[in-house]
Length: 72
Image (cartoon, rainbow, N blue to C red; front, side, top):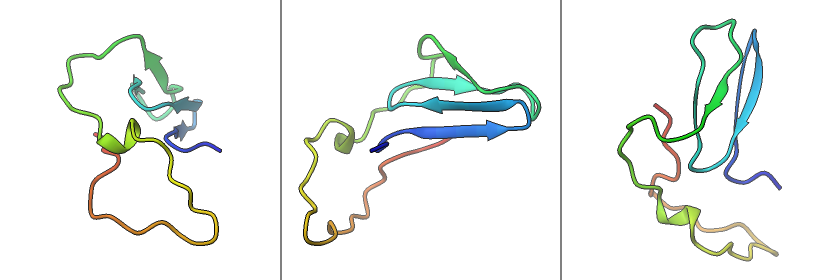
């Protein structure tokens, strides 16, 4: 399972980012890289990132209007 991961790909390569990680790519031909700490972006992770997983066996989870992920 890869819930919460974001894969960023371009002509330079591909990198996978987990919740709370920061990264960037300086051009369309440079591989995306993880930066070691928050570069000064102010945000709060949605509560869904720290909530225990829900059991969805036998059906689908109800949809929510809450934002689970924001890419800038």
